[in-house]
Image 1 (cartoon, rainbow, N blue to C red):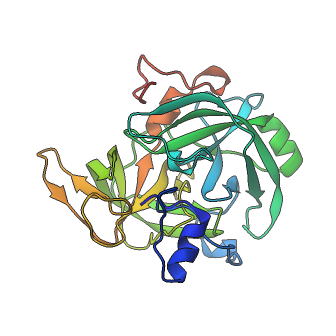
Image 2 (image 1 turned 90 degrees about the vertical axis):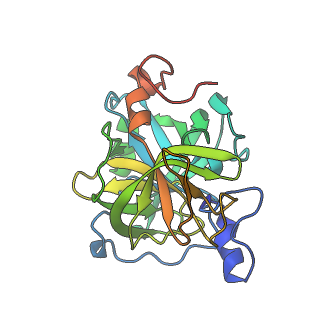
Length: 284
């Protein structure tokens, strides 16, 4: 499921379970392998960060300015404080978490970014966490010659070519959006309008929080978060699909992400997440 904790994939390689109760499937495992040449991928590692247990990206919304404190996007289940409970929404919680910023090849660490707070995080309806950093976009660009990725405010389309860019593993997975899931359930959590990947995006533990990048626009349309590992029905690490009529479908080996256009539309002036009104993100 929650492809997050660093130790997860390493445990799988050792014959153990990919996830522990502390983290979701696509969290990170052991030490990352050497990065492949960026030229082999449609999208590179510019704006990508690595967490201690997950992946993430430096992002900006449609209203963000260069003078705003920058934001890092990852999964809600990647929080240093543990996975939020179903129905829980976290806003403006102090944080000193750090993120390793990669160069565009993924082979070099440019520096360390530091958070001041968790701007917004939840695992209800979606699986996202947004950290506010100490530095502005302008300062990061001046120091590291790196720009943030843009969050798309538009709903993506089925068939779109995408890249899932993992800062933890320094690996890019490429595929197309196969479709969208009305409701997806995993253990206690339910997510809306999830992105289902087509063949090629065989994400693993540690890829949690990786941005889903539209290959054509280079904008972020989602955040990678889970996959059905063993064919179980609606259990941890085995999400199930639920259609509008309540019919449940299990797709063993299929991986998923959560859309981010709703988050983009909720970012107001100063990079504040403005809840209520036209913003459909869950509120505390």
